[in-house]
Image 1 (cartoon, rainbow, N blue to C red):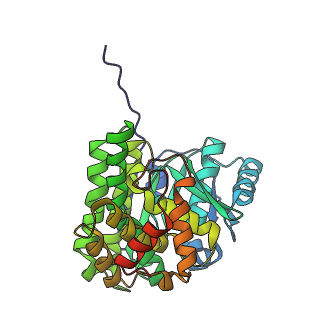
Image 2 (image 1 turned 135 degrees about the vertical axis):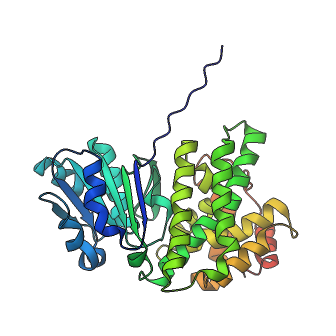
Length: 348
């Protein structure tokens, strides 16, 4: 008897484009949410557009998140319970949006995502990433009820945040290949639709890398569309597999070995170069990935990331221990093999 089923949770409203922040109130009203909102943001986004957001919401209260972590999530939960918030609004980059996402999941209420930087695909996905000490936890959470991404705001975000978002998306190439490998060797469930969508977003950025430049709204439009598509791919798959393979394990291990040196997306991009080489050899996609990252001014070497050769090799040889997720790294690669791939791809 056929008993296969799936449950895909997606945002009901996605607004992307010039000046759409002005439509936030209408987008929220259309959701028919009850109660008053709690806005979760960080200092810079709050100063930039916090008042514009609050002006469109009924009797909002605000929590400022200076540092991400489980303590910040609990702070939001406590504030929401005290005011009996009807829903949450995550305003800013990764810290406030992931904090709002995880708090809303714990509270059992919806949240709205209002990104001010195109730095990660978490603006629409059902995954939250929270640091704790020298590690980072990636956990399942509710996707946003709505996403309001104003390209005029995103285009003015620090360029390094945009390049980090681009690198994160480009790494979908290697994540999907790892997912397919796990399907063949370990019978891990693979979604053709989710995999195709994730790979398409990577192709979108590689093909348009030369068009993505600082301060251009057209560039912000391309990047945020790719970020939304990547988040949707994860919702379709019901996991982070479409956007997280060996390159993400490498980045998470770097967070432990050399915390705070580089942005997550930049670490993932460098990891994707090496992962692609391991997957397909010298004739594979690694050079296309490297060239696209270089065109975007994103890091392509250990030096660019601010880490030593020894730290990079340690991260690459131990990345497989991060979590129980089968990738091209298998049960680990030797130090000699790590040096060989890092030198062949000009990472060191």
